Amino acid sequence: MPDTLSPSQRSYCMSRVKGKDTTPELLVRSALHGRGLRFRKHAKELPGKPDVVFPSSRLAVFIDGDFWHGYRFPLWRDDLSPFWQEKIGKTRERDQRNFRKLRRSGWRVIRVWEHDIERRPTAVVDRIATAVRQAAQTATSPFHLSPTRDTLKLD
Image: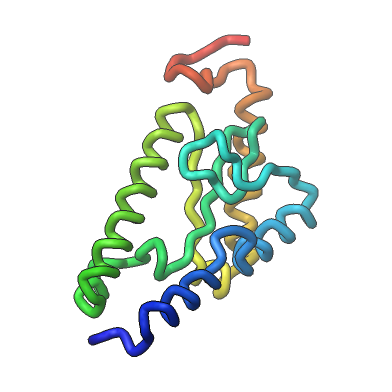
């Protein structure tokens, strides 16, 4: 299906799409803060600039839009123009590459989808809070995995 907007109109529309502080991000961050959890936003030094980062727990949370990051992309890929197929495909590849880099560096990665936040916001925040608590318990245990190596370390 051809684009119904002129290139300048399409450019203007695309320039209005936010990359940070989206509504789903604000909802999750507000709920996490309300539970007393403290975090950093958009850590530039980490691969993929996670939306929410708990440095002491080594937990990175990505809050992804269903369209832009291709939720269940193979099911609707053929409905898009080649331009969007390529763009979303590259975004998905980049996301996986960043997740692998973080995991290899000892980070736990949680991906939250936009539709999950809309349908079950409490469950999403519970999942993140549980992961933070589990990481804190592991860090205080006398036996835990070193964040830089996959070896058991005795404190």
